[in-house]
Figure 1: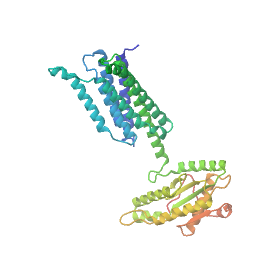
Figure 2: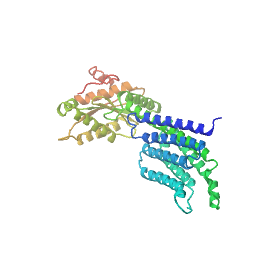
Figure 3: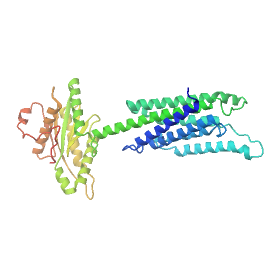
Figure 4: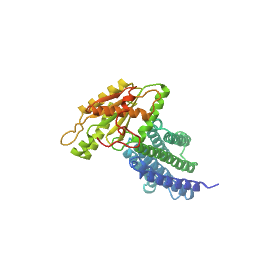
Amino acid sequence: MFQSHIVVLIAGLFALQMGVVCVVLRRSSGMDRSGLTSWALGSVLAAVAAALAAVQELRPLWLVPESTGLALLAALSVMAVGARHFAGRPGRAAPLLALNLAGAAAVAWHDLAPQYLAGPVALPELAPLLSACHILVLLDLARSVVPSVPGTRGTGRLAALSLVLIVIAAAVINAWTVSLPLAALAQGGAWPRPMPWDGELAMLNVFVLVGVSVSFALMAHDRLRRMLERRARHDDLTDVLLRGAFWEALEAACLRAERQRKSLTVAFVDLDHFKAINDVYGHLAGDSVLRHFAGLLRKTGGQVDVVGRLGGEEFAIVMPDTALEQGRLACLQLATAVRATPCPSEPDPIAYTVSIGVATRQPGEGADALMRRADRALYDAKLKGRNCVSLHPAGADGAADAAPVGRYVTRGQPRVAS
């Protein structure tokens, strides 16, 4: 069986490895403000604490007994700051820094005062104070992570839950280890310096820091994975679903509507004369118009509506549990909002309109057929002069099939700007 100093050094090596993992995760796009820098620094400080614990075990006269506790407190404090940044609640760095500086000054005074002062000096015991600081920082770390437990799913929730459990268990163990000496101290006894189990407690705390670092790295990895998945499914410019993700959502909505025997309405939206907007105002202004319209879509749409960009200036809306007339009213509201809210631009706002085709799913109808009917309705809206809402009611397939071939939407190839 390994000796205790070997075990704690192995824990320190694991802490250094977790620091490297945090640095690698931080280099990923979008993860630069997730508290990973603080956790990498905290892992390095945990490795330093492990080295100090090993030296304390081998050469106890080289270091003051509280040196390992100070290093552990510094590592915990930096990790607590990183956890708050990860949770989107930065702050408390200054109080934690002041706490660590006060602890270091107290340890230095406790060790040096008897050597330089002539008379006897009554100094308070620092071990219980450092343990109390450890417990407070551990609880603050847990409080920062607790809101992430119900807010995430899968790996992220499991990692957050494991971190909270590890931190709470460590706080309880630290409180228990100092309870008996505190009781003896309250009865007039002396505090053992160092405590008989001081090395074991330091080893435990180092492993706690390694464990919470692993849990936090898993939380950061889960956030990075979800971020990349969102980027793969959402349009960078408008933040609505891309074509492939929209078709997946539409097919799922069709299956759900068929299974539950509920209504499902889709709207196919096209920005009128968008090519002219690009030609007159420039492509950057055209991008601003697309972002502006996407914002109106989210503002006027229902909470369960699914919005996607099918290409260029073409958008589509899936409205679950919505009949044809309800969908028409919603699209009229959207068209009115577009006319009433020009896109902000310099020197003058850019006014634009939309044409919308609406169709409601028939029993047994799939996503392709439903979108073809919505596209035919959009074509009818353009024939009527644009800037209007057109419907494709059930039973109108025969007349619609006479429309020009190639005008209708397909999964793989969007139409050119019109």
